[in-house]
Amino acid sequence: MQDNQTISSVDEQLYKTNSFSKKAFGNDFVWGVAMASFQNEGAWNLDGKGESIWDKFSHRKNINKEYQNADAACEFYHRFEEDILIAKSLNFNTFRFSISWSRILPDGIGRVNHTGLEFYHQLIDCCLENGLEPFVTLYHWDLPQILEDRGGWTNREVINWFSEYCEVVTREFSGKVKNWMVLNEPAGFVGLGYMTGYHAPGRIGMKNFLPAIHHATMCQAEGGRIIRKNVSDAIIGTTFSCSFVEPFSQKPADVQAAKRTDALLNRMFLEPTLGMGYPVEELPFLKKMVRKYVHEGDMEKLAFDFDFIGLQNYFKVVVKNAWWMPYLGASEVKPHKRNVKELTDMGWEISPDGIFQILNQLSKYQEIKQIIITENGAAFKDNLEEGNVNDIERIAFYESYLQHVLKAKESGIKVSGYMAWTLTDNFEWTEGYKPKFGLVHIDFKTQKRTLKGSGKWFRDFLGE
Image (cartoon, rainbow, N blue to C red; front, side, top):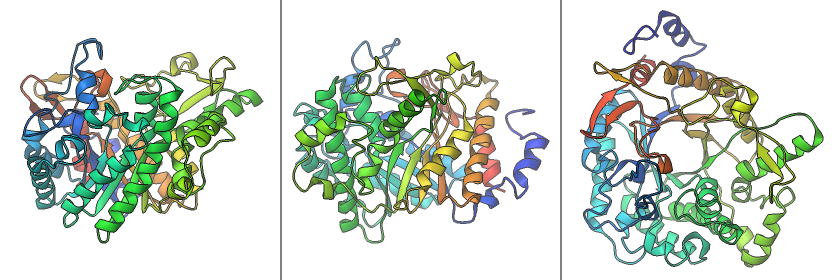
């Protein structure tokens, strides 16, 4: 790039041709940005909001090296109008955000916080007034802590708790919101929160992991049914973090390790939702889950006919056989061990071919009607110099990934939208504020917003 305000003449010619342009994706293609309540809102204990598992978890001194938390985050709770105007100026047509369960139901169930409802009414109205179609995620990892104290996702009662929350929210916003997503990345919040303990609430072991898998999958379908009941003409989806899994070699043991890993990462939550049941043959440990936690009639209730599946993809995964790894018998071969040089600041391999491969893989399921990429983006070390952020690596990332999305669409894969992660730099869970994913730079001391070169790239690309 020549500078962070203009696109090079080569790239300009590239995306203004029919081979790579907004027009090439079609007039009905969804273009948006995505964000999450906990990562952006701040105001963690204001206006009647209850404590979430991430509020408690991030207040632990050892969550990250800088002792950071999301008490203020991006102050989206107070600055949402400014951020919506920025999203509009970048020519997006949708805005994906999540609702904080504990801002609506401070006690998890029962008492409704009407001030919390009013905040989301104002946010939704602001989106609509500025030509941004709201896409609402019901659950993006911030379970009320009071429910975690009662077992959280390991307690079968969570199905009733979640259903009550869904009823309140969908009835309240049914006249304004047509596009809904039930869960954000169940493999993420269940695996990291209830198996490895790396994320909130910090639980470890199979005794937590197995019931949480089943209860989250049950809630996913039940949430879909509640939306269908309460919202006329609703467009309903749910999101999965999926990565194309590649064997390190073509040795039979590595190929089988890749199949098991694919079942864990990509199939474990998706296939029961599609009415196919859990992949117990590839993941024998799920047989114990089925015996212990699946009640009579549950398998039929796991399925729901979603209008779209949200794909969240950032990198591919390369694995090899590892007999010493419990349950899975596979281990990831990290990019640096494969001499991969193109990495994001998170250490993730930049692999645009991977998004095409996983789209192609999902397209094989006849039960999937449409795919919307509900998250894709990259963190890099941004430098704010003289009021500009010249993030050429992020621009190149988006160009290459979008080219492969277009390749998928032109090959007949039913991909109907793309949402960049994320609008503004925010609180990246246990990594704190160090990773910068935003199209907009935030000075977290002053909360000043500065549009990055990548934001200007989207503005120009979508404004053609």
